[in-house]
Amino acid sequence: MLHKKFWLWLLLCIFSLGLPMVTVSLPAYAAVDPYVTRFLKVAEPISLKADTAENTRLFSAEDLSDGKALFGKNCLNCHVGGNTLPDPTVPLSLTALQGATPKRDNINALVTYLRQPMTYDGTEETLVCRQVSESWLPTPRVENLAGFILRAAQNAPGWGTETFQD
Image (cartoon, rainbow, N blue to C red):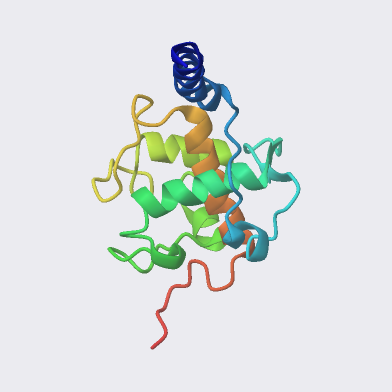
């Protein structure tokens, strides 16, 4: 009987020590936010404008879901639905992004803006939008955020309207 208890105890110890290692080593699969598939219309990877030279970069639904989560956590207080509460005349619509100086209608330009926010006319730094340093968010994640903003500006219904409806 003692022999069986020992083997049972040993088996439980191995299992309890091994289970955390197995779960830690399993790859993480990012969930796709339903908003991304329904309103941004992304199920397969899509191309978004990467720079002013018309180069593109592919973004998966998982990338844009990550960008949406970052937006919700860090940008939503001021940019509800792509609007800009501190200055409603400068929303995150595609037209407004294209009208900024320099234009913010591509991934690299948005990443540059997020790393060093400037006023809409590009003449001075702004404190209204917080600076996203490399130590806070690495470039691939900031690119996911920029990808979400651009795709939402292209496809999301009501994104970045200049007026609020009652």
